[in-house]
Length: 397
Image (cartoon, rainbow, N blue to C red):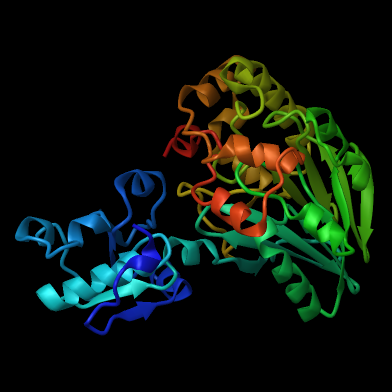
């Protein structure tokens, strides 16, 4: 049933904005959610948190005068937040619960699509170079991106296609111009915004090492090889080739202080090595990742700030609210960074999470092999990123 076809509830249904719900969860307030999507969608992707209780009862069970066995599944809460994909089914169910049970049920505005539109910008305060570095956070998927601003110029690293307008708005806020859009690799969990930004007059860059995967638009963009650099005001962004997650994976050292590691090293885990060559090629990719970590990243000063391309439930934010950490602290906290190669490969491959939703279509889109519109791009990337190896296995939590 299409959500637009749901009747308008007789009862007045209040709504809560996704940003307000997230603020309650971040504050540790108790939040009870009734998710009325079908079970397969709920199992793939849902709103969670330490203070969140979530129950799944599909919307169709509330159609045509639900009986007591259905209503008894509904958790008690004041208020109860009802969630669906786009806000239509949940508004209907919230109305039914208000009428049938007198429950204080409120509707999540725009559903999970609204949740996916939350996008924060937080400053990396431990950055010790020219200008400033900001981290973008998309809580619905854990995707992280970065904005470098210095002396009236700016660059965005790992931009999302769904938020290209946002980058221009933010740069205007800093009275700067957006000069560069840079990708760390061919992403498997979200649609890149680099090409769209390039079409809007921003110089787009992809790693030179990623072209061999079949990038169809390589001649239309600039490329960065290991050791190449771009200048953003007084800040230098230097390319550091860091293969493992993909053969083209490239990190960027900003102002000699912050290493934007893409999907190579996170604050709670390391990259999964199976998304380019599959299970068969994963062991060799894991060995390549080990070599990269030992010879390209762990040789940097301990005070280097590691800023990855994703966060997961296992990640703890730094004091400034960003998912960043000192390299020396990660070496101390993450045992696999101190292992030999065989043990490292074994633990990385031991507990691989499910692959990102629609990852094959997303990769094809980012290679330029699929042409999709903005709405299709947004729908394609909904869900968790799953680009890391199991965080719990690697941290020992």
